[in-house]
Length: 455
Length: 95
Image 1 (cartoon, rainbow over the protein chains, first blue to last red):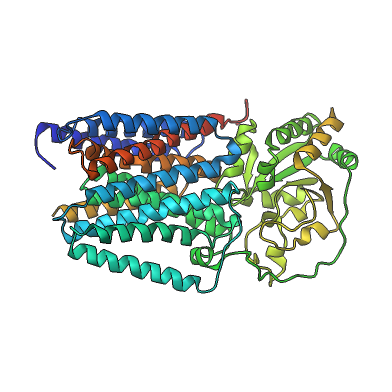
Image 2 (cartoon, helix red, strand yellow):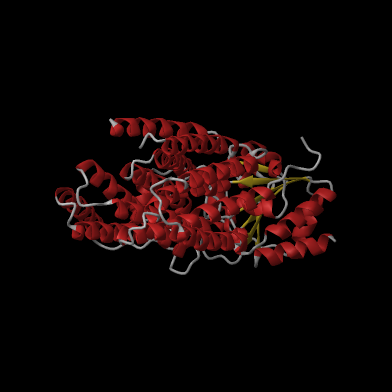
């Protein structure tokens, strides 16, 4: 940190942008002010970038400009074209790029006479950045289903991972002793990238909300470590803000699934050992026409969406049905489980896209006490988050997970493609309950059928 | 001394981060995450200094690459968050 006027201006600009990040994040906490908060934080980023550009240590600009243009154009195009249903993949991918950038910064910061502390921070930024990068790529692959979304487990996985960690620590120690020997750095980079892959492949698709939150946190921590490596305050402040917020979200996700973080990370949920619970009762299908008669008489309807709604792109037709029901005099609410979908808040974004006002979206704790007064609960492409086994069947893998108690509603319609079991492969006794009717078929078509019956 | 100073900053920012995010309603979790994600592109600031040294050595090329990658993160992150938040509406005339 030099004490010239130029240096002082830069440092002060960083203070201002840190303030804008903090205030922006605070405004992001309420739906009414969130958009302003995001703008505010982007202004903070702009100030930080301009401040970095006026640094006198910079003698040529062409590569910076080229980098910003290329990156900015790619980012803007991706942000504009992405479908709301693919938002989890998009966030994972952006995240990965941020991680890789931190890896490169850490790498570039290494020089032959780096002290031990600097080497440690460089290794941390390379390690966390590398894990974030490949981890996010795997998460992207799983979410977009370009690779299988199930958990990949093999014998000796824990041993391989432990060896990887030991290898990273070992080469980091060697690097601290001879920072001029880049070979050790390359080994750290290689092992970190490999470790990112190994860390995410054993995690199943249903646990993706946790993984995305965690990777988000890592990308912040990587920026933070890079800040230590190059002695830059703003990187540390912004990075740790993101790191902390990601960890909070991760915790919320874990709590909503009643599972510990270590269980999510290491056990490969839904990976084969689920036992067959014997479920009494029979499945009662219903036709679109009969469903319409029931809905027409209903005065209180709750809609519980899940990932299936995203897959079927059914959010707009859901909104249409919702309007018709309201025109028919019914009260319609949406019950959103915290881990419905593939990232935290996924369903809320989709329904917002379809113009459903956010005060109509109720969280699990709000909708559950009202469930007994609900005439018809419509479950659209959700399975585990409405599974009463979580309350009733102690041997169920999801026992203890808080769920939306749709089975207390007078009638439950379950929109489902077929009877194949859900993502986690767990039997759902809901489908066999006395008050449950199954509406088989593509969710979008079934809902479209209902809409046609109404109009 | 710098190390102690930087560690202080780290500690305070982590606490601040926890406090800021703790009470955010579930509705906003996706925009929050992608907004925070955009902030993590702050690495671009560090990368700019490295990409502009004029040394034409490995470090400069790494810096230029990092500028490009972090710019994707920053620009994409903020725009997509804004696009999402623009869709969040209250019930017309309600509450």
